[in-house]
Image (tube, rainbow, N blue to C red):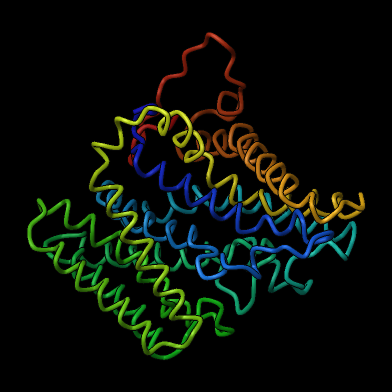
Length: 367
C-alpha cells in the first residue's frame, strides 16, 4: 500500500464517495445561469449515494479499529480530535462570512447562541447546522456514542459486536416503519434514522471477517434483504434512502471482499488513494468553493451551453482546494492533536528530499 497503516480499498471507497458528493453538489456552480440541474434530472434517485457509502465504510472502519482502544473515553477522545478541529474551523469561517454579508448563509440558519454552540460542538439539531454538510456528521457522532457505550458495557467481548450490529439494523428499521427521516425536525430521533442501517452493514461485515467468515455473512445478507424489503412499505423518502443504503452496502462489501484483485490495478492506487486521504477536507470545503465560484459564474452572463465545462472546472477546483486544506490543515492538526507531534513540527512543510517517518498511533500509522 502507498501509506502504512492505511487500507487502500477503504481509501478508494472514500474517494469514490467524495467524488459523487462533489458531483451531486455541482449544481451550485451552474444554477445562476443554467436550468440544467442534476437535482431535477434522471440522476435524482441516486443523488447523494456517496454519503451512504461513507456511512457503510465508517461502520466497517470503526468496527476494525475499536478494539485498539482500551476504554470508551479513549475511543471518544480520538474521534473528537479527528473530526471536530477542522469542522470547527469551517464553522467559524461560515459564521465570519455571515457577519461580513448576511446573504452568505446556508439553509437559512438562525443566528442564535443555540445554533452556533451546537454547530461548533457537532451536536444533533432540529435543523441543518451552520456548515450544511455537517448534518451527516451529527449521525456519525450518534454512532460513535453508541459504540462507546458498547465498549463500556462489554469491552467488545464474545458475541456482543454481532448483536450490536443487528441492533443497529433494528434502529434503522424502526425509523423506516415509523416514517422518521434523517432530516426529521426532532433531533432526538436521529438514532432511529434509516442511516443506522449503513453503519450496521459495515460493522456486521467486519464482524464476519473477524470471525473467520463463519455464519455471519448469511446474517448480513438477511439484514440487507430486510432493509431492501422495507422500501416497499416505507414512505417515499425513506424508501429511496433504504434502496441507496442497500446498494451502497453491497458495493462496499464487494470492494472489501475482492480487494486483493483490485490492488493489482496500479492506476486506482495512484489516483484514488491520495483522493481518499483528503476526503474529509474535500467534504467540508467543496461547498464553500462551489458556492463562491458559482456566484462568479452567474455574474459573467454565461450561456446555457457553458454549464458542462463550468461544472467540470469547478469540480476540479473543489477537489484541488480540498487537497490544499488536507495538506495545510487537516493532516498537521491530526499529527499534532492525535499523534502527539509538537505543533511546530506538525505544521512544518514537508521539504523535498526529507523523509517523514510514520507516527505510531492506536489506529495505525499516521502519515
